[in-house]
Image (tube, rainbow, N blue to C red; front, side):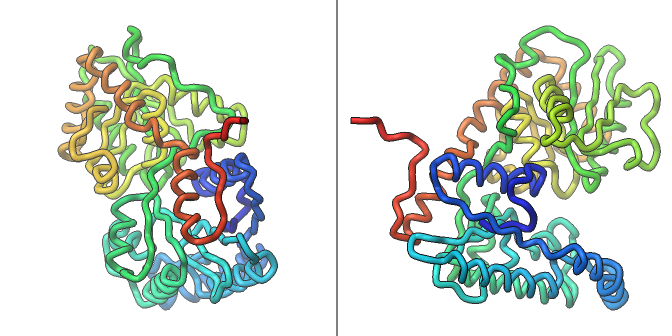
Amino acid sequence: MCADGDSRDINLWSNIPFLLGAELERRGIELIRVNLQAPWLIRRLWRYSLGPRHKLRHWHTSIDFYRSRTNHWLTTRRLDRAVRRHGGPGTLLINLSISCAPSKSTIPVVLLSDWSYHHYINERLGREPDRAERGTIARETAAMARASLVVVLFPESAARLQRQIPAGRFRFLGHVINDHPLAPPPPAQPPAATLHRPWRLLFVGRPRYLEGLELLLQAVALLPADLPVQLDAIGIGAPDLASPPALQLPVHLHGYLSKADPAQRHTYYSLLNQADLVITASSGWGGFSATVEAMHRRTAVLTAPYAEFQALFGTTIPFGAYLPELTPAALAVAITTQLREPDRLAQQQQAAHTAVLEFTWEVFVDRLLAELETLTSNTWPSSIPVPAT
Protein backbone atom coordinates (compact mmCIF):
# COMPACT_ATOMS: atom_id res chain seq x y z
CA MET A 1 0.00 0.00 0.00
CA CYS A 2 1.55 3.27 -1.17
CA ALA A 3 0.86 6.77 0.14
CA ASP A 4 2.39 10.22 -0.01
CA GLY A 5 3.60 10.02 3.58
CA ASP A 6 3.61 7.51 6.43
CA SER A 7 0.38 5.52 6.17
CA ARG A 8 0.68 4.68 9.89
CA ASP A 9 0.16 8.37 10.73
CA ILE A 10 -3.52 8.86 11.56
CA ASN A 11 -3.29 12.55 10.60
CA LEU A 12 -2.42 11.69 6.99
CA TRP A 13 -5.21 12.43 4.46
CA SER A 14 -8.32 12.47 6.70
CA ASN A 15 -7.17 9.30 8.55
CA ILE A 16 -7.90 7.14 5.46
CA PRO A 17 -4.49 5.44 4.99
CA PHE A 18 -4.28 4.59 8.70
CA LEU A 19 -7.81 3.20 8.97
CA LEU A 20 -7.75 1.30 5.67
CA GLY A 21 -4.41 -0.27 6.55
CA ALA A 22 -5.62 -1.20 10.03
CA GLU A 23 -8.70 -2.99 8.64
CA LEU A 24 -6.67 -4.88 6.02
CA GLU A 25 -4.15 -6.00 8.66
CA ARG A 26 -6.95 -6.94 11.06
CA ARG A 27 -8.01 -9.56 8.52
CA GLY A 28 -4.53 -11.03 8.36
CA ILE A 29 -3.65 -9.53 4.97
CA GLU A 30 0.08 -8.92 4.64
CA LEU A 31 0.57 -5.21 4.03
CA ILE A 32 3.82 -3.76 2.70
CA ARG A 33 3.72 -0.01 3.29
CA VAL A 34 5.58 2.26 0.86
CA ASN A 35 6.12 5.95 1.60
CA LEU A 36 6.12 7.81 -1.72
CA GLN A 37 6.92 11.23 -0.30
CA ALA A 38 9.91 12.87 -1.95
CA PRO A 39 12.98 13.69 0.18
CA TRP A 40 12.61 16.93 2.12
CA LEU A 41 15.59 18.51 0.33
CA ILE A 42 13.93 18.10 -3.07
CA ARG A 43 10.63 19.45 -1.74
CA ARG A 44 12.43 22.41 -0.19
CA LEU A 45 14.35 23.10 -3.42
CA TRP A 46 11.12 23.11 -5.41
CA ARG A 47 9.33 25.32 -2.89
CA TYR A 48 12.00 28.02 -2.80
CA SER A 49 13.50 27.77 -6.28
CA LEU A 50 11.59 25.90 -8.97
CA GLY A 51 8.16 26.70 -7.51
CA PRO A 52 8.55 30.51 -7.54
CA ARG A 53 9.90 30.38 -11.10
CA HIS A 54 6.90 28.31 -12.09
CA LYS A 55 4.59 30.89 -10.49
CA LEU A 56 6.19 33.65 -12.55
CA ARG A 57 5.15 31.88 -15.74
CA HIS A 58 1.75 30.74 -14.45
CA TRP A 59 0.90 33.28 -11.73
CA HIS A 60 -2.58 31.97 -10.86
CA THR A 61 -1.82 28.25 -11.13
CA SER A 62 -2.74 25.80 -8.37
CA ILE A 63 0.29 23.61 -9.14
CA ASP A 64 2.33 22.80 -6.05
CA PHE A 65 5.14 20.30 -5.58
CA TYR A 66 2.74 17.38 -5.19
CA ARG A 67 1.19 18.18 -8.61
CA SER A 68 4.50 19.01 -10.29
CA ARG A 69 6.18 17.15 -13.12
CA THR A 70 9.17 16.61 -10.82
CA ASN A 71 7.13 14.82 -8.18
CA HIS A 72 5.28 12.79 -10.81
CA TRP A 73 8.58 11.52 -12.20
CA LEU A 74 9.91 10.67 -8.72
CA THR A 75 6.68 8.98 -7.66
CA THR A 76 6.46 6.89 -10.81
CA ARG A 77 10.02 5.66 -10.22
CA ARG A 78 9.16 4.67 -6.64
CA LEU A 79 6.02 2.84 -7.75
CA ASP A 80 7.99 0.99 -10.44
CA ARG A 81 10.57 0.03 -7.81
CA ALA A 82 7.82 -1.22 -5.48
CA VAL A 83 6.44 -3.46 -8.25
CA ARG A 84 9.90 -4.89 -8.98
CA ARG A 85 10.69 -5.54 -5.31
CA HIS A 86 7.37 -6.80 -4.03
CA GLY A 87 5.36 -7.86 -7.08
CA GLY A 88 4.55 -11.52 -7.40
CA PRO A 89 1.70 -14.03 -7.63
CA GLY A 90 -1.24 -13.01 -5.47
CA THR A 91 0.14 -9.50 -4.93
CA LEU A 92 -1.41 -6.21 -5.96
CA LEU A 93 -0.50 -2.57 -5.51
CA ILE A 94 -2.82 -0.01 -3.91
CA ASN A 95 -1.81 3.63 -4.36
CA LEU A 96 -3.80 6.07 -2.24
CA SER A 97 -3.88 8.63 -5.03
CA ILE A 98 -5.13 8.78 -8.59
CA SER A 99 -2.32 11.11 -9.64
CA CYS A 100 0.23 8.43 -10.40
CA ALA A 101 0.55 4.75 -11.33
CA PRO A 102 3.49 2.51 -12.24
CA SER A 103 4.71 3.03 -15.80
CA LYS A 104 4.25 -0.70 -16.30
CA SER A 105 3.22 -3.44 -13.93
CA THR A 106 3.12 -7.22 -13.78
CA ILE A 107 0.54 -7.09 -10.95
CA PRO A 108 -2.90 -5.43 -10.66
CA VAL A 109 -2.79 -1.74 -9.75
CA VAL A 110 -5.56 -0.11 -7.70
CA LEU A 111 -5.80 3.67 -7.27
CA LEU A 112 -7.94 5.20 -4.52
CA SER A 113 -8.83 8.86 -4.06
CA ASP A 114 -11.67 11.35 -3.67
CA TRP A 115 -11.84 13.30 -6.95
CA SER A 116 -9.72 14.24 -9.94
CA TYR A 117 -7.53 17.31 -10.26
CA HIS A 118 -9.64 18.45 -13.23
CA HIS A 119 -12.76 18.32 -11.05
CA TYR A 120 -10.99 20.27 -8.31
CA ILE A 121 -10.09 23.10 -10.70
CA ASN A 122 -13.49 23.18 -12.44
CA GLU A 123 -15.74 22.80 -9.39
CA ARG A 124 -13.73 24.04 -6.43
CA LEU A 125 -11.79 26.86 -8.10
CA GLY A 126 -14.53 27.64 -10.64
CA ARG A 127 -12.35 28.04 -13.71
CA GLU A 128 -10.69 26.21 -16.57
CA PRO A 129 -7.20 24.73 -16.04
CA ASP A 130 -4.17 26.66 -17.24
CA ARG A 131 -1.46 25.17 -19.47
CA ALA A 132 0.61 23.77 -16.59
CA GLU A 133 -2.47 22.30 -14.94
CA ARG A 134 -3.51 20.67 -18.21
CA GLY A 135 -0.18 18.84 -18.22
CA THR A 136 -0.83 17.51 -14.71
CA ILE A 137 -4.37 16.50 -15.69
CA ALA A 138 -3.03 14.61 -18.71
CA ARG A 139 -0.56 12.69 -16.53
CA GLU A 140 -3.31 11.89 -14.00
CA THR A 141 -5.68 10.72 -16.76
CA ALA A 142 -2.98 8.43 -18.16
CA ALA A 143 -2.38 6.96 -14.70
CA MET A 144 -6.08 6.18 -14.22
CA ALA A 145 -6.26 4.62 -17.69
CA ARG A 146 -3.32 2.30 -16.81
CA ALA A 147 -4.85 1.20 -13.51
CA SER A 148 -6.71 -2.09 -13.13
CA LEU A 149 -9.25 -0.42 -10.80
CA VAL A 150 -9.88 3.13 -9.58
CA VAL A 151 -11.86 3.48 -6.34
CA VAL A 152 -13.41 6.92 -5.86
CA LEU A 153 -14.86 8.03 -2.53
CA PHE A 154 -17.75 10.05 -3.96
CA PRO A 155 -20.49 8.68 -6.25
CA GLU A 156 -20.76 11.62 -8.67
CA SER A 157 -16.98 11.75 -9.07
CA ALA A 158 -16.84 8.04 -9.90
CA ALA A 159 -19.61 8.37 -12.51
CA ARG A 160 -17.98 11.46 -14.03
CA LEU A 161 -14.60 9.75 -14.39
CA GLN A 162 -16.21 6.69 -15.95
CA ARG A 163 -17.77 8.93 -18.59
CA GLN A 164 -14.47 10.71 -19.22
CA ILE A 165 -12.41 7.49 -19.44
CA PRO A 166 -14.82 4.83 -20.77
CA ALA A 167 -12.13 2.14 -20.95
CA GLY A 168 -11.29 2.61 -17.25
CA ARG A 169 -12.84 0.75 -14.35
CA PHE A 170 -14.18 3.15 -11.73
CA ARG A 171 -16.07 2.15 -8.60
CA PHE A 172 -17.78 3.94 -5.73
CA LEU A 173 -17.81 1.49 -2.80
CA GLY A 174 -19.61 3.65 -0.26
CA HIS A 175 -18.48 6.26 2.23
CA VAL A 176 -16.78 5.64 5.59
CA ILE A 177 -16.72 7.06 9.10
CA ASN A 178 -13.14 8.02 9.92
CA ASP A 179 -13.28 7.27 13.64
CA HIS A 180 -10.10 6.81 15.64
CA PRO A 181 -9.82 3.25 17.05
CA LEU A 182 -9.80 4.71 20.58
CA ALA A 183 -12.75 7.03 19.95
CA PRO A 184 -15.51 6.94 22.59
CA PRO A 185 -18.88 5.52 21.51
CA PRO A 186 -21.66 7.81 20.24
CA PRO A 187 -24.14 9.07 22.84
CA ALA A 188 -26.73 6.45 23.77
CA GLN A 189 -29.61 8.77 22.82
CA PRO A 190 -30.03 11.92 20.72
CA PRO A 191 -28.79 15.03 22.57
CA ALA A 192 -32.11 16.84 22.00
CA ALA A 193 -33.95 14.05 23.85
CA THR A 194 -32.60 15.50 27.08
CA LEU A 195 -33.51 19.06 28.05
CA HIS A 196 -30.35 21.19 27.95
CA ARG A 197 -29.32 24.74 27.25
CA PRO A 198 -27.59 26.20 25.41
CA TRP A 199 -28.18 24.41 22.13
CA ARG A 200 -24.87 23.24 20.69
CA LEU A 201 -23.98 24.19 17.11
CA LEU A 202 -20.94 22.63 15.44
CA PHE A 203 -18.71 23.72 12.55
CA VAL A 204 -15.84 21.53 11.34
CA GLY A 205 -13.57 22.67 8.54
CA ARG A 206 -10.12 23.79 7.53
CA PRO A 207 -9.28 27.46 6.90
CA ARG A 208 -10.18 26.94 3.23
CA TYR A 209 -13.81 26.72 4.43
CA LEU A 210 -13.57 30.03 6.30
CA GLU A 211 -16.36 31.45 4.15
CA GLY A 212 -18.82 29.01 5.74
CA LEU A 213 -17.75 29.85 9.30
CA GLU A 214 -17.97 33.60 8.70
CA LEU A 215 -21.49 33.16 7.33
CA LEU A 216 -22.39 31.09 10.39
CA LEU A 217 -21.00 33.74 12.75
CA GLN A 218 -23.21 36.35 11.10
CA ALA A 219 -26.22 34.04 11.37
CA VAL A 220 -25.62 33.37 15.08
CA ALA A 221 -25.69 37.13 15.70
CA LEU A 222 -29.20 37.21 14.18
CA LEU A 223 -30.70 34.42 16.32
CA PRO A 224 -33.55 35.34 18.71
CA ALA A 225 -32.48 36.32 22.22
CA ASP A 226 -34.64 33.57 23.74
CA LEU A 227 -32.78 30.86 21.78
CA PRO A 228 -29.50 30.31 23.67
CA VAL A 229 -26.82 28.64 21.58
CA GLN A 230 -23.12 27.85 21.73
CA LEU A 231 -21.11 27.54 18.52
CA ASP A 232 -18.01 25.34 18.55
CA ALA A 233 -15.70 25.62 15.55
CA ILE A 234 -13.09 22.92 14.94
CA GLY A 235 -10.28 23.37 12.43
CA ILE A 236 -10.21 27.17 12.42
CA GLY A 237 -8.67 29.35 15.12
CA ALA A 238 -8.81 33.06 15.89
CA PRO A 239 -5.67 33.84 13.78
CA ASP A 240 -7.48 32.52 10.69
CA LEU A 241 -10.25 35.14 10.95
CA ALA A 242 -9.95 38.58 9.44
CA SER A 243 -11.32 39.96 12.71
CA PRO A 244 -12.19 38.19 15.99
CA PRO A 245 -15.86 37.38 16.68
CA ALA A 246 -17.82 39.94 18.66
CA LEU A 247 -17.33 39.41 22.38
CA GLN A 248 -21.05 38.90 22.94
CA LEU A 249 -21.21 35.97 20.50
CA PRO A 250 -21.23 32.53 22.18
CA VAL A 251 -18.41 31.18 20.00
CA HIS A 252 -15.52 28.87 20.86
CA LEU A 253 -12.76 28.54 18.25
CA HIS A 254 -10.85 25.33 18.96
CA GLY A 255 -8.47 25.37 16.00
CA TYR A 256 -7.06 22.13 14.63
CA LEU A 257 -7.58 19.11 16.89
CA SER A 258 -5.34 16.12 16.21
CA LYS A 259 -6.82 12.67 16.77
CA ALA A 260 -3.29 11.41 17.44
CA ASP A 261 -3.06 13.54 20.60
CA PRO A 262 -5.14 11.99 23.45
CA ALA A 263 -6.20 15.33 24.96
CA GLN A 264 -7.15 16.86 21.61
CA ARG A 265 -8.90 13.66 20.57
CA HIS A 266 -10.96 13.78 23.78
CA THR A 267 -11.96 17.38 23.05
CA TYR A 268 -12.83 16.55 19.44
CA TYR A 269 -15.16 13.67 20.25
CA SER A 270 -16.70 15.46 23.25
CA LEU A 271 -17.72 18.31 20.96
CA LEU A 272 -19.20 15.91 18.39
CA ASN A 273 -21.09 13.94 21.03
CA GLN A 274 -22.65 17.09 22.50
CA ALA A 275 -23.58 18.78 19.22
CA ASP A 276 -27.23 19.29 18.28
CA LEU A 277 -26.60 20.58 14.75
CA VAL A 278 -23.58 20.34 12.47
CA ILE A 279 -23.64 23.14 9.90
CA THR A 280 -21.78 23.32 6.57
CA ALA A 281 -22.51 26.49 4.63
CA SER A 282 -19.52 27.05 2.34
CA SER A 283 -20.57 27.71 -1.25
CA GLY A 284 -18.25 25.27 -3.01
CA TRP A 285 -17.71 22.39 -0.62
CA GLY A 286 -18.01 21.55 3.06
CA GLY A 287 -16.33 19.15 5.48
CA PHE A 288 -17.99 15.99 4.11
CA SER A 289 -16.10 13.46 6.25
CA ALA A 290 -16.57 15.48 9.42
CA THR A 291 -20.30 15.81 8.72
CA VAL A 292 -20.58 12.02 8.41
CA GLU A 293 -18.65 11.60 11.67
CA ALA A 294 -21.06 13.98 13.41
CA MET A 295 -24.07 12.13 11.96
CA HIS A 296 -22.71 8.89 13.40
CA ARG A 297 -22.75 10.61 16.78
CA ARG A 298 -26.42 11.56 16.48
CA THR A 299 -26.06 15.11 15.23
CA ALA A 300 -28.66 16.60 12.88
CA VAL A 301 -27.44 18.38 9.74
CA LEU A 302 -27.90 21.77 8.10
CA THR A 303 -25.94 21.82 4.86
CA ALA A 304 -25.67 23.48 1.51
CA PRO A 305 -27.07 21.20 -1.23
CA TYR A 306 -23.73 19.83 -2.46
CA ALA A 307 -24.13 17.51 -5.45
CA GLU A 308 -22.08 14.70 -3.87
CA PHE A 309 -24.05 14.89 -0.62
CA GLN A 310 -27.35 14.70 -2.51
CA ALA A 311 -26.07 11.82 -4.64
CA LEU A 312 -25.32 9.89 -1.46
CA PHE A 313 -28.31 10.82 0.72
CA GLY A 314 -30.99 12.11 -1.67
CA THR A 315 -32.52 15.48 -2.44
CA THR A 316 -34.56 15.41 0.79
CA ILE A 317 -33.06 14.24 4.06
CA PRO A 318 -34.81 12.99 7.23
CA PHE A 319 -31.87 13.98 9.42
CA GLY A 320 -31.95 17.75 8.91
CA ALA A 321 -32.39 20.14 6.02
CA TYR A 322 -30.70 21.63 2.98
CA LEU A 323 -30.14 25.37 3.13
CA PRO A 324 -32.29 27.15 0.49
CA GLU A 325 -29.79 30.00 0.20
CA LEU A 326 -26.45 30.89 1.73
CA THR A 327 -27.15 34.20 3.46
CA PRO A 328 -26.92 35.07 7.17
CA ALA A 329 -30.68 35.69 7.38
CA ALA A 330 -31.65 32.42 5.67
CA LEU A 331 -29.19 30.45 7.82
CA ALA A 332 -30.50 32.08 11.02
CA VAL A 333 -34.07 31.13 10.04
CA ALA A 334 -33.01 27.54 9.32
CA ILE A 335 -31.24 27.21 12.68
CA THR A 336 -34.20 28.70 14.53
CA THR A 337 -36.64 26.35 12.78
CA GLN A 338 -34.58 23.31 13.79
CA LEU A 339 -34.13 24.32 17.43
CA ARG A 340 -37.72 25.43 18.08
CA GLU A 341 -38.96 21.82 17.85
CA PRO A 342 -36.85 19.65 20.19
CA ASP A 343 -38.90 16.48 19.61
CA ARG A 344 -38.50 16.71 15.85
CA LEU A 345 -34.82 17.56 16.27
CA ALA A 346 -34.29 14.43 18.40
CA GLN A 347 -35.90 12.33 15.66
CA GLN A 348 -33.60 13.91 13.07
CA GLN A 349 -30.57 13.23 15.25
CA GLN A 350 -31.50 9.56 15.50
CA ALA A 351 -32.14 9.45 11.74
CA ALA A 352 -28.65 10.87 11.14
CA HIS A 353 -27.13 7.98 13.10
CA THR A 354 -29.24 5.44 11.22
CA ALA A 355 -28.31 6.92 7.82
CA VAL A 356 -24.61 6.11 8.28
CA LEU A 357 -24.80 2.76 10.08
CA GLU A 358 -23.23 0.95 7.13
CA PHE A 359 -20.47 3.53 6.66
CA THR A 360 -17.91 1.27 8.33
CA TRP A 361 -14.44 0.26 7.22
CA GLU A 362 -15.54 -3.37 7.51
CA VAL A 363 -18.25 -2.85 4.89
CA PHE A 364 -15.96 -0.75 2.67
CA VAL A 365 -13.17 -3.33 2.74
CA ASP A 366 -15.65 -6.16 2.09
CA ARG A 367 -16.69 -4.37 -1.11
CA LEU A 368 -13.08 -3.57 -2.01
CA LEU A 369 -12.00 -7.19 -1.60
CA ALA A 370 -14.93 -8.36 -3.71
CA GLU A 371 -13.61 -6.14 -6.50
CA LEU A 372 -10.04 -7.33 -5.94
CA GLU A 373 -11.05 -10.99 -6.27
CA THR A 374 -11.85 -10.27 -9.91
CA LEU A 375 -8.28 -8.99 -10.41
CA THR A 376 -6.30 -11.79 -8.73
CA SER A 377 -6.67 -15.47 -7.97
CA ASN A 378 -6.70 -14.71 -4.24
CA THR A 379 -9.64 -15.41 -1.96
CA TRP A 380 -9.60 -12.54 0.50
CA PRO A 381 -10.76 -12.90 4.13
CA SER A 382 -14.28 -11.74 4.93
CA SER A 383 -14.96 -9.40 7.83
CA ILE A 384 -17.17 -12.14 9.30
CA PRO A 385 -15.10 -14.97 10.82
CA VAL A 386 -15.99 -18.48 9.63
CA PRO A 387 -17.32 -20.54 12.59
CA ALA A 388 -15.19 -23.48 13.69
CA THR A 389 -16.58 -26.91 12.79
